[in-house]
Structures are given as structure tokens and as C-alpha cells.
Image (cartoon, rainbow, N blue to C red; front, side, top):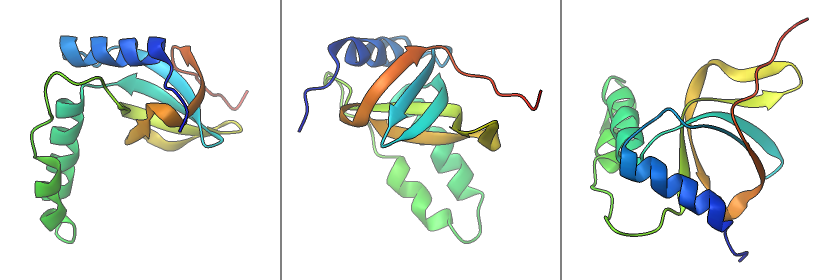
Length: 119
């Protein structure tokens, strides 16, 4: 197991402590480029729970995301809200998704989110 990037852990901890989803970040994890806004884990879990609860076929999974997040521990994951996986000039999904990425899996990162264009 690799040692997590301490600066990235600090950024994730600031997002967690401020309960803000305004920090934009782009990461490379497992060869995928993911770009979007970070959210506190509790906010991310709540939103995923709401989406699942609204689904007829996936509603039963909603409860798995309502468990409280342990307080006082260093973040181990980044929680992206309104995020896209970039592939060429396309962002998937176009409207943005909810992604959870292990900080240990991030091989590169930069501040801000990348835009893409057909031009």
C-alpha cells in the first residue's frame, strides 16, 4: 500500500471540516481522469441515499449510505459531486455524477476542474 499524499489528505480534511462542496479538483486514479467538486462525505452519502431512495429497483440500497461517518479520523477517500470521467473530448456523464475515490489510488492531481469542448 502506498503512502497517501499528505497535501491531498489535508485538502480533503478541509472540505470535511467546512462542509463545503466548492473545492474543485481533478485526479488521475487507476488511469481514469475524474474532475469535479469535492463534497464532505456526509453530504455525499446523503445525496446518494436520496437518489437511491427515489429508485423503485434500487431503493433498498439507500439505507447503506445513511450510516454516520466516523468523526475525528483522517479522510481516506475523496467524495466527488457533479463530477465527470474525462475521455477525449467527452465528460461522462454529461450532467455529472457522484464518485468516491480512495486517496491511496490517486497518482496525480491538480486544483480545478477541466472543461471539455467540441471546438
